[in-house]
Image (cartoon, rainbow over all chains, first blue to last red; front, side, top):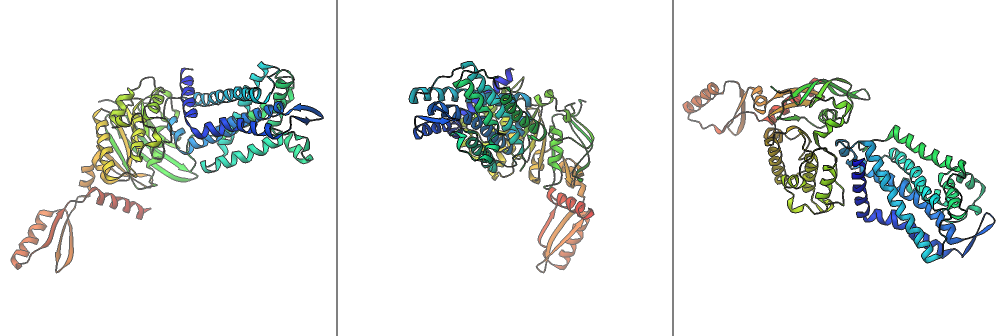
Length: 251
Length: 286
């Protein structure tokens, strides 16, 4: 426990000191939110109903932020640390591997929680977005999102062979997923086959959950099917990681 | 007599059917600097990674500080320090920040300021690691391995890629570690390094130990001495185990003929000669 907190503090220090991480992981989703709200008209049509675009996009960018921070960010960081030998070096110290992974995920949770607060502040302060209808559920969604996407991030890190390719691989997954799931705009206009793809993506279901708690005041677990899909993706990542994760450089 | 720090008995390891280590045995005493010397691909790194607990072994018995490194118990990792061959320190933290983080992993650790001083980075203690030179980063590497106050330190090719001045500095540092009573397992493919630093050496070639002993013993084991001179401009080399009588014969003959033995030189083989010969022998047998 003491070690986990020690490592969490170390991870936080490293994260906020790194300009790249702070810009791409922390600032980018906020920037994208501000841009998209300015581009869309005040109200947009989603599944037949008109909603405020500031609200719709806040939920969308919240989901994108979760995937960007926990999935993309974590995968890139872990592959980088593996290939530079940083993970190998850590394995020679008494820090238990499980404690390290827990601390890294907790650090991701802290980053995304701060980002979520910043997103809400930006939305309500500048664009008149609503406050979460179910605040506790919204906080729960922060944890659920990080848990799911961190699992996928660690699993993906285990599959990526080189540090050079990490960023490319991760973005090839992340950006289409965000588009298809409706992070950046309603999916109503998607052709049938793309909707079919979207229907298996974890972000699609995560956004449904987020919309439920954020706009409609539903409980986090009101759609258990959606929660199950999100959890299954996270678990799949963990299983891949348990089988393939390496502390030694691959190249 | 205290138990040896490292006992390796008939260690074996293969990768996909290819034998990397084929039955290696040696012991390292407490407080000893032991060198594993061999060309690239000889099995040095595999051996060391098994001792460090990174890789499982296929066969043989290994004991490091009384532990089986294959089980990598935490108490074991409290007591070893590892300087990796392949590691880049990429960090936006300062030297002291990173050392404090590593110090926190150990139940008992050395004072961070002391370690910084030991590796000669006091002036750079608050500099970001990104801003350090390659040689300075390797010193941070060493500091990270020392901060847990280990009893046993693994140094894998510690000066590869160093310029001559940096190598001298690194050697001095390693000598000062020995004077602290640390046991050191050093792998290197530099002969001068092994000769300078190691109390005893194992020469590894193709996954086997081909010679084991002090640097002096290894040179002595070669036995013969070379006598070189030039006759009519042509170099002459005589290898002999009895240099005194051969030399006497040569010089008295030359005196009688009124000739000068140009460029006369009597030399004992260096470790390099012995090493190259050993590795060559092993290769031609394989």
